[in-house]
Amino acid sequence: MQYAIELYFDQETEQKLYALAKQVADQNLSTKFLEWKTRPHLTLACFNDVDEEKCIGLLREFARNHKQMPAYIGSVGMFNDTRTIFASPIMNACMYQLQRELQECLKDFDSAGWEWYRPDRWTPHCTLALTKEDAEDVFYKASDLILHAFKKMSGRFVSVGLVKITFPVKEIFAIELEGEA
Image (cartoon, rainbow, N blue to C red; front, top):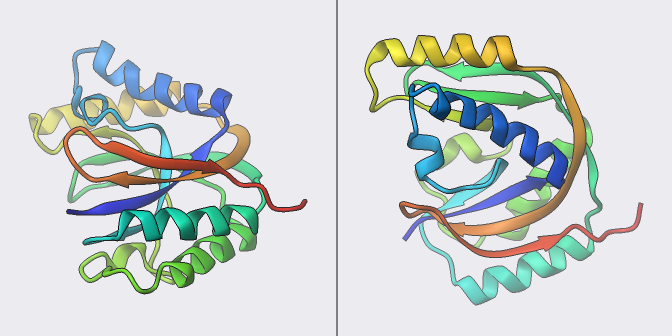
């Protein structure tokens, strides 16, 4: 079974990002992202298998030692090979450090094949549309829609979660970041 660790936004920012994804579905372009039933997030790490209880314990400790941080969403991007449309956070040293420390915390779990989520290769993104299974023109129409609807936003990264990568995604555990400011 495959798993991911996700970084979640505050509720208001999450709702704004979800609204962008919903516009793609409401315009009858693509519903695939909504069908996954996942929250807007940044994926921090992926694993082929984890001991769920051990991972939850490690995430509890990680959350105790890491604080919530500002989230600035400044642009829209695309992965052309998978026809994925996403919102991009404006990155800073604290975010890269958070991801690096999470990877170190969970280093005993098998991450082979998930190299794009490793430090120094990570492309942080918040997926808004998955159009690979749709007609090719859907990618361009959805991109145009999101480009016109997108507005820069700021909020907070407030929690981390463990999810099982199934269809739909199953959230196993989430915890607020509690570290001292």
